Structure formats: structure tokens, C-alpha cells
Image 1 (tube, rainbow, N blue to C red):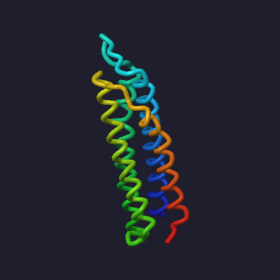
Image 2: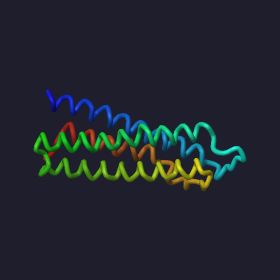
Image 3: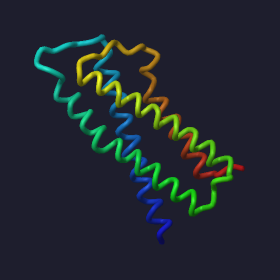
Image 4: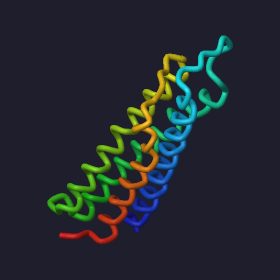
Length: 143
């Protein structure tokens, strides 16, 4: 019963984390599409709200995802398994990407943003691809 409870909360935390990352990526892409837009009255309420959400919800969900996921891996005895090592690598990349997105939100909030290169506008798709890889690894547990 403990395992199922941990698993349920892990899934909820992961969904919350990834949802927050996708929202941040779309907001950043939209806000930086035309280069820096300085306003004399400070950052927009939308950017402020997104940054606050990222700090209070998305970041906490990421930490919970890691903690609960590691607990599940210990309980399941999966640490020597290749699929778990690959999954942890992908999740580590997602964590790094979240850090980058948080930094972009901070710079937007401080109005120190620059135009985001068009190649980086594919970040929402990168997040979806990475999450898909994680889901496939978890469900199939190959080798």
C-alpha cells in the first residue's frame, strides 16, 4: 500500500512539474518573440504570476518528483537496471532545462531579457519528447 501511495504522489508531482515547464516554455517563447520589450511600469502581471507559479509550484513539484521517484526505485530494487539509469539521465536533463527556464523567467521579470533564438522555441516539444521517453521506459522497463 505504501508503494502505491508513493507512486500516485510521484505521478501527480511529475504531471504538475511538466505542466509548469510547458507553461513556462510557452510564456517565454511568446514574451521574447519580438526581442526585449521594456516597460516603464515593470514586468507584466502575467510574467510575474508565471514566475511566482514556477517558484512556488513547479520547482516544489520537481523536488517531490525526484524524492518520490528515488524512493520508488529503492523500494523496487531497480537501481542496477539500465532502463532506470537512462530514465534518470533524461530526468536530469529535464531538471537542467527547468533551471534554464526559471532563469529565463527571472530575466524576463527583471526586464533583462533578450530575444530568444528561434531554435530554442522548440523547447515545449523537447519537453514532450523527453517525457514520452520516460513514460515508455517506465511502462515497458526494457532490459
